[in-house]
Image 1 (cartoon, helix red, strand yellow):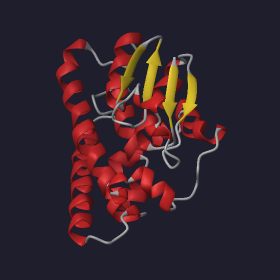
Image 2 (tube, helix red, strand yellow):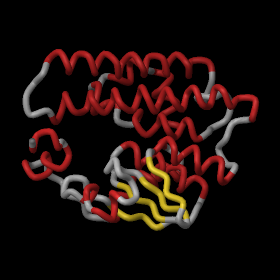
Image 3 (cartoon, one colour):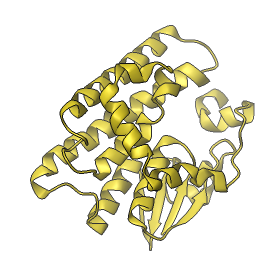
Image 4 (cartoon, helix red, strand yellow):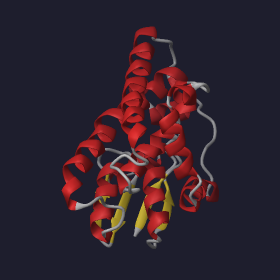
Amino acid sequence: MKFYFNGSPNPTKVALFLEETGLAYEPIPIDTRTGDQFKPAFLALNPNGKVPVIDDGGTVVFDSNAILLYLAEKTGQFLPPASARGEMLSWLMFVATGIGPFMGQAVHFKHFAPEKVEYAHKRYQFEATRHFTILNERLAGRPFVLGPDYTFVDMAAWGWARMLPFVLGEDVWAKFPHIKTWHDGIAARPAAQRAVALKDRFTFKATVDDEARGFMFRHLAG
């Protein structure tokens, strides 16, 4: 299995699943700051030009949440009981359509936008906080998102949760004590540590200069 990745939140959650299951995979770095994501060979795999992507013996899957669902169903690992499939899909889509997009925009307008847009900053900070408030309340009465068992939905949410201080501020854990307990438990797992360290085996461009902005934020090139 080929795994196209970088060290951002979405590939990291797929790396976590791969490390948890011990599936054999070949990591292929895609440096989005140098434009690897727009090379023809990569666009043939994902026309959307984003990581992660897997090529599982000719079966290509892109989007981190789709990959997690595909791998969980393929392996039969880290799935909830069949009776919880409705909850599984609901919370997976909560991550896919809520946590991920709002956190991504919150990151952009806080750290990377070339001009400060106060309305956009406040909106995405608010929505990111709102979504994690819901998750915090969900975790108040259970150790994992779907109940007593650790599943791939936890991996999907953890990929972004580990970025909370960077996005919402260093004091964020005081607001989300249940997420903190859950996050730390996953972060302590050897598989999580290997997933986070995967990027360190490769060289990625460290600076966000004009060239990198041109590749990462293509509207700026127009």
